[in-house]
Figure 1 (cartoon, helix red, strand yellow):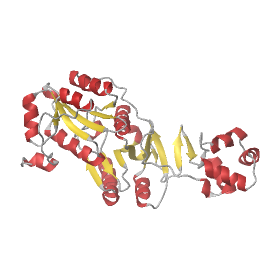
Figure 2: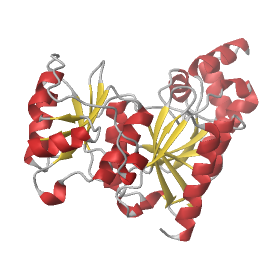
Figure 3: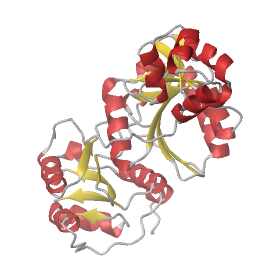
Figure 4: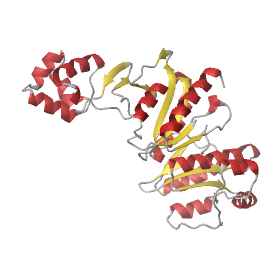
Length: 335
């Protein structure tokens, strides 16, 4: 890992260790450039984050963003990128930038937000900066001053329709227009941007399955009404959700190169612990492998058991013990 990226990661970790309840560093795969998620975070207000750390937002590839967004969507957690620069330009403190639909902030903005010392009101949208406005407060303040839509539009130098759209939350004003709006109506019309807001709609994964086991499990979940997200560059292979349940799975394939390593499973359990899912398990078709993992305290399912579970039967054919921590996995101690 290059020095600048390491410094940024340590800076982010120092902030999170101070203000978060739980933090999991997901160092898998080991090559930083290939990971779509670096950190899983649980905040005191029960909000959860999946975080990618980079020097520049453009260094986070489209594939990494897709993993981040898809998993965040089905798990009901917030995706976030923390970086020093955005397309080569220093990120401004107190501004939320956009990287393919994911909010991106500087380490300083993250710390100010978590500490309560600052809020984000300005965000980037299609290469322009806009300010988040509270529609109800805007309409109330305008009426209190006896201004019509046309009156306010004339003072802002915009159209009546633009003000109408502001008051219905359809669009936010540009930074320049918001400065005039605040001078007229006051700061009460501002509304902070929630950088920890989960996606409003669940996005089922758009990626195609890559293996037979992945195809089998995905079909079982989708037929049971679950939204399924496929991940390629992190410790979880599948995430899924319904209106009531959220699951995370690792796929243990028959092919030697696609078997789930102990390291991956250990980090996977850390991810599940921090984001708080209803079920997390390794899925395998190999009975010998299943028994060995189960003896190590890893929750294991066969595809058939997954089918029974999502059908509502909740059957569990293999007994399981409490999963071991990552340190226990590495030390070889019994759970």
